[in-house]
Image (cartoon, rainbow, N blue to C red):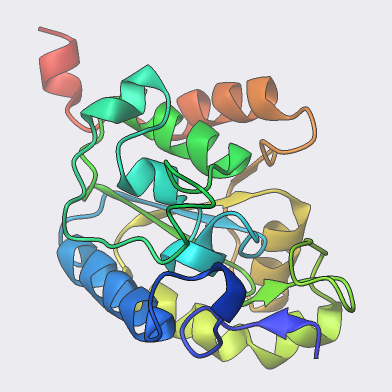
Length: 213
Protein backbone atom coordinates (compact mmCIF):
# COMPACT_ATOMS: atom_id res chain seq x y z
CA UNK A 1 0.00 0.00 0.00
CA UNK A 2 1.13 3.56 -0.64
CA UNK A 3 -0.24 4.89 2.65
CA UNK A 4 1.60 5.31 5.96
CA UNK A 5 -0.41 5.43 9.18
CA UNK A 6 1.77 7.33 11.70
CA UNK A 7 -0.08 5.79 14.65
CA UNK A 8 0.17 2.17 13.49
CA UNK A 9 3.07 1.91 11.03
CA UNK A 10 6.77 2.28 11.70
CA UNK A 11 9.90 3.26 9.80
CA UNK A 12 12.57 1.19 11.63
CA UNK A 13 15.59 2.52 9.73
CA UNK A 14 14.71 6.12 10.66
CA UNK A 15 13.20 5.88 14.13
CA UNK A 16 14.81 6.16 17.52
CA UNK A 17 12.35 3.90 19.36
CA UNK A 18 10.82 0.49 18.67
CA UNK A 19 7.49 1.84 19.89
CA UNK A 20 7.46 4.93 17.65
CA UNK A 21 3.79 4.48 16.63
CA UNK A 22 2.82 4.34 20.33
CA UNK A 23 4.72 7.58 20.98
CA UNK A 24 3.02 9.29 18.03
CA UNK A 25 -0.37 8.06 19.27
CA UNK A 26 0.39 9.53 22.68
CA UNK A 27 1.45 12.80 21.05
CA UNK A 28 -1.83 13.00 19.16
CA UNK A 29 -3.98 12.12 22.19
CA UNK A 30 -2.26 14.75 24.32
CA UNK A 31 -2.50 17.31 21.53
CA UNK A 32 -6.25 16.88 21.13
CA UNK A 33 -7.03 16.66 24.85
CA UNK A 34 -5.28 19.97 25.53
CA UNK A 35 -7.24 21.75 22.80
CA UNK A 36 -10.78 20.46 23.31
CA UNK A 37 -12.69 23.26 25.00
CA UNK A 38 -9.84 25.74 24.45
CA UNK A 39 -9.35 25.99 20.68
CA UNK A 40 -10.78 29.04 18.93
CA UNK A 41 -9.82 28.07 15.37
CA UNK A 42 -9.54 24.80 13.44
CA UNK A 43 -7.42 24.65 10.29
CA UNK A 44 -7.92 21.69 7.92
CA UNK A 45 -5.28 20.96 5.27
CA UNK A 46 -4.85 18.14 2.75
CA UNK A 47 -2.88 15.24 4.24
CA UNK A 48 0.13 14.52 6.46
CA UNK A 49 3.60 15.08 5.03
CA UNK A 50 6.58 12.73 5.20
CA UNK A 51 8.41 15.49 7.09
CA UNK A 52 5.57 16.40 9.44
CA UNK A 53 2.95 14.16 11.04
CA UNK A 54 4.67 11.03 9.72
CA UNK A 55 7.17 11.43 12.58
CA UNK A 56 5.40 13.77 15.02
CA UNK A 57 1.95 12.19 14.89
CA UNK A 58 0.39 15.67 14.83
CA UNK A 59 -1.07 17.32 11.73
CA UNK A 60 0.94 20.22 10.27
CA UNK A 61 3.47 19.89 13.08
CA UNK A 62 7.11 19.02 12.51
CA UNK A 63 9.56 17.67 15.04
CA UNK A 64 11.56 20.86 14.70
CA UNK A 65 8.57 22.80 16.05
CA UNK A 66 8.18 20.31 18.90
CA UNK A 67 11.85 20.77 19.77
CA UNK A 68 11.74 24.57 19.52
CA UNK A 69 14.35 24.61 16.76
CA UNK A 70 12.36 26.36 14.05
CA UNK A 71 12.03 30.01 13.09
CA UNK A 72 12.76 32.61 15.73
CA UNK A 73 9.05 33.19 16.36
CA UNK A 74 8.59 29.45 16.98
CA UNK A 75 11.50 29.12 19.38
CA UNK A 76 9.20 30.70 21.97
CA UNK A 77 6.76 27.81 21.55
CA UNK A 78 7.05 25.36 24.42
CA UNK A 79 5.82 21.82 23.70
CA UNK A 80 7.61 19.58 26.23
CA UNK A 81 4.65 17.20 26.34
CA UNK A 82 5.54 15.77 22.91
CA UNK A 83 8.35 13.42 21.90
CA UNK A 84 10.22 13.09 18.64
CA UNK A 85 10.50 9.66 16.96
CA UNK A 86 13.08 10.22 14.21
CA UNK A 87 16.75 9.34 14.68
CA UNK A 88 18.70 12.26 16.22
CA UNK A 89 21.90 11.13 14.55
CA UNK A 90 20.20 11.53 11.18
CA UNK A 91 18.19 14.68 11.91
CA UNK A 92 19.86 16.43 14.84
CA UNK A 93 17.17 19.09 15.27
CA UNK A 94 14.30 16.96 13.98
CA UNK A 95 12.69 17.18 10.58
CA UNK A 96 11.42 20.54 9.35
CA UNK A 97 8.31 20.89 7.20
CA UNK A 98 7.48 24.05 5.26
CA UNK A 99 3.70 24.09 5.68
CA UNK A 100 3.99 23.34 9.39
CA UNK A 101 6.45 26.21 9.84
CA UNK A 102 4.26 28.68 7.96
CA UNK A 103 1.02 27.73 9.72
CA UNK A 104 2.48 27.71 13.23
CA UNK A 105 4.34 30.97 12.58
CA UNK A 106 1.22 32.71 11.28
CA UNK A 107 -1.01 31.63 14.15
CA UNK A 108 1.65 32.48 16.72
CA UNK A 109 2.22 35.92 15.21
CA UNK A 110 -1.53 36.57 15.35
CA UNK A 111 -1.33 36.09 19.11
CA UNK A 112 -2.78 32.59 19.47
CA UNK A 113 -1.56 30.41 22.29
CA UNK A 114 -0.57 26.90 21.21
CA UNK A 115 -3.79 25.41 22.60
CA UNK A 116 -6.03 28.03 20.96
CA UNK A 117 -5.76 26.61 17.45
CA UNK A 118 -5.96 23.01 16.33
CA UNK A 119 -4.69 21.48 13.09
CA UNK A 120 -5.96 18.49 11.13
CA UNK A 121 -6.11 17.09 7.59
CA UNK A 122 -8.88 16.06 5.23
CA UNK A 123 -7.09 12.72 4.85
CA UNK A 124 -5.66 11.45 8.16
CA UNK A 125 -2.78 9.24 6.95
CA UNK A 126 0.33 10.02 4.90
CA UNK A 127 -0.21 9.21 1.21
CA UNK A 128 3.00 8.60 -0.73
CA UNK A 129 4.16 7.50 -4.14
CA UNK A 130 4.52 3.78 -4.72
CA UNK A 131 7.86 2.40 -3.49
CA UNK A 132 8.81 5.76 -1.97
CA UNK A 133 7.60 6.26 1.59
CA UNK A 134 9.52 9.55 1.75
CA UNK A 135 7.39 11.31 -0.84
CA UNK A 136 4.03 13.04 -0.79
CA UNK A 137 1.04 12.67 -3.07
CA UNK A 138 -2.48 14.03 -3.17
CA UNK A 139 -5.03 11.64 -1.65
CA UNK A 140 -7.49 10.24 -4.17
CA UNK A 141 -11.19 11.04 -4.06
CA UNK A 142 -11.86 7.45 -3.03
CA UNK A 143 -9.42 7.72 -0.13
CA UNK A 144 -11.02 10.95 1.02
CA UNK A 145 -14.51 9.45 0.89
CA UNK A 146 -13.49 6.24 2.68
CA UNK A 147 -11.82 8.18 5.50
CA UNK A 148 -14.43 10.97 5.78
CA UNK A 149 -15.80 9.48 9.01
CA UNK A 150 -12.50 10.33 10.70
CA UNK A 151 -12.74 13.98 9.65
CA UNK A 152 -16.37 14.14 10.73
CA UNK A 153 -15.54 12.68 14.13
CA UNK A 154 -12.67 15.14 14.53
CA UNK A 155 -14.93 18.11 13.70
CA UNK A 156 -17.53 16.87 16.20
CA UNK A 157 -14.94 17.43 18.96
CA UNK A 158 -14.72 21.11 17.97
CA UNK A 159 -18.34 21.76 17.00
CA UNK A 160 -18.47 25.37 18.18
CA UNK A 161 -15.10 26.43 16.79
CA UNK A 162 -14.40 28.41 13.60
CA UNK A 163 -13.13 26.07 10.85
CA UNK A 164 -11.05 27.15 7.86
CA UNK A 165 -9.96 24.89 5.01
CA UNK A 166 -6.45 25.25 3.61
CA UNK A 167 -6.44 24.58 -0.12
CA UNK A 168 -8.81 23.06 -2.65
CA UNK A 169 -8.44 19.43 -1.59
CA UNK A 170 -9.56 20.16 1.96
CA UNK A 171 -12.31 22.51 0.81
CA UNK A 172 -13.68 19.99 -1.71
CA UNK A 173 -13.59 17.16 0.82
CA UNK A 174 -15.50 19.24 3.36
CA UNK A 175 -18.01 20.36 0.73
CA UNK A 176 -18.63 16.73 -0.29
CA UNK A 177 -19.39 16.02 3.36
CA UNK A 178 -21.97 18.81 3.46
CA UNK A 179 -19.91 21.50 5.18
CA UNK A 180 -19.98 25.05 3.84
CA UNK A 181 -16.80 26.56 5.24
CA UNK A 182 -14.42 29.39 4.32
CA UNK A 183 -11.08 28.50 2.80
CA UNK A 184 -7.71 30.06 2.05
CA UNK A 185 -4.88 29.21 -0.30
CA UNK A 186 -2.69 26.33 0.87
CA UNK A 187 0.74 27.77 1.76
CA UNK A 188 2.69 25.15 -0.24
CA UNK A 189 4.08 25.67 -3.74
CA UNK A 190 4.43 29.43 -3.57
CA UNK A 191 1.16 30.10 -1.76
CA UNK A 192 2.63 31.42 1.49
CA UNK A 193 1.81 35.12 0.98
CA UNK A 194 -1.76 34.51 -0.19
CA UNK A 195 -2.25 32.06 2.69
CA UNK A 196 -1.04 34.63 5.23
CA UNK A 197 -3.31 37.32 3.79
CA UNK A 198 -6.29 34.98 3.80
CA UNK A 199 -5.76 33.91 7.40
CA UNK A 200 -5.51 37.55 8.54
CA UNK A 201 -8.79 38.32 6.77
CA UNK A 202 -10.69 35.28 8.05
CA UNK A 203 -9.28 34.61 11.50
CA UNK A 204 -9.73 37.36 14.11
CA UNK A 205 -7.11 38.00 16.79
CA UNK A 206 -7.74 35.75 19.81
CA UNK A 207 -8.05 38.70 22.16
CA UNK A 208 -9.30 41.71 20.14
CA UNK A 209 -9.97 43.81 23.24
CA UNK A 210 -6.29 43.61 24.10
CA UNK A 211 -5.13 44.48 20.58
CA UNK A 212 -7.40 47.51 20.52
CA UNK A 213 -6.32 48.78 23.92
